[in-house]
Image 1 (cartoon, helix red, strand yellow):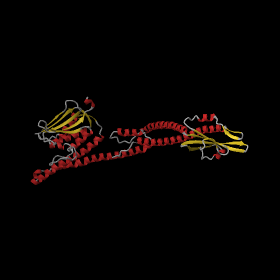
Image 2 (cartoon, rainbow, N blue to C red):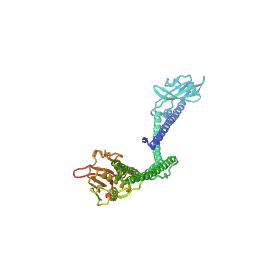
Image 3 (cartoon, rainbow, N blue to C red):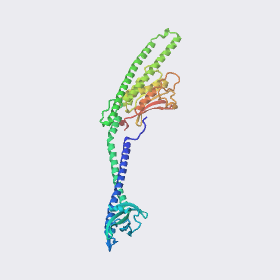
Image 4 (cartoon, rainbow, N blue to C red):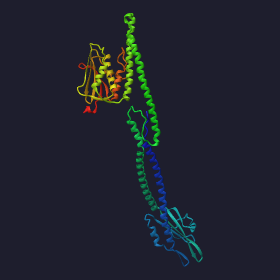
Length: 463
């Protein structure tokens, strides 16, 4: 039994989805780094521009360094409305000229002489970005360096990063969804050859054992080649089985017929009473063996024809009449009343004439040998959308608790006498193969015991 596993489509979709998720995560991470760098660059330029404007406010009056705060500098920084601004101006002696005296206490301002310094810091419990700018001052005592420090909180930067990342996430999510949907359609289209191959196999006739001839992609060709190899091997096995059944039928039936003929030629009058009894037993066993062998071969033939024979419309009246003629022997007990009653209307079913006739023959033969005492009736009737071939006899019938078992091979309700247990098994297998069933009707005071073969009628007959 094949273990159930997820479909190839779902497995491919899971793997593609995993790849897209990893790619989306990488893109979002890269977008976050890019957004942070872009926000820092934009606001650092504003901060640096404000620092340069503020540095122009450093002037020397009467050999004293003074600072005049340009209004335009704060107008520039005011573009970031969420942020707070802190500044500090140091004179040439390194003392705070104006501003917040504790701002940038950890910054080495001398390094800003080569180029402005930009660094992150924490001031008064909040994250800030600090720009340190140096400015050369000429005084009577010589040239010195004044320093200007401006700090800005990072709320606007974080807001810009969040906005850029959110937009990038929306774009990446939309593109990933479109890619996933497109991949699903592409995979469905790519897997169509697999579905066509399955449909080709499912629609093949049971007796068609020719190799597959279907256009498939190169990846599926080893699979198709394996199927064709299996079909060829199966065809060889079926041919060998057919030959074996035919040879067995010929090789077994011929000696049995000859043996029965030889036994019938023995002159019983010249035999002693004990020898006559032995001869009678031989005759009975030979007849039983011939009947059992014929049923075995017929059973094999029926199984084979059910799988390989071409089915067509059949008249139930014709099938029942042919089976009645074949099953009722010429030497039937003259005291037994046998009758055949066809249906008044045409009842057509789909089946194989040989298999269906053999099934009805086995039902009639079983009734003659093990049921009927003085009467046997065969008739064809309609029951809704089904047609029935009913075989009635005045025998004791079969107990209801044994109905489910008598259709099994080699099961018999007789404890004495010859019984192969194949008659009902053959009839039941034929009925199931044709969409019908083998049924029983219990014996009552008004109705005798009956066995019936029920088959669905053709569409034309149902209407």
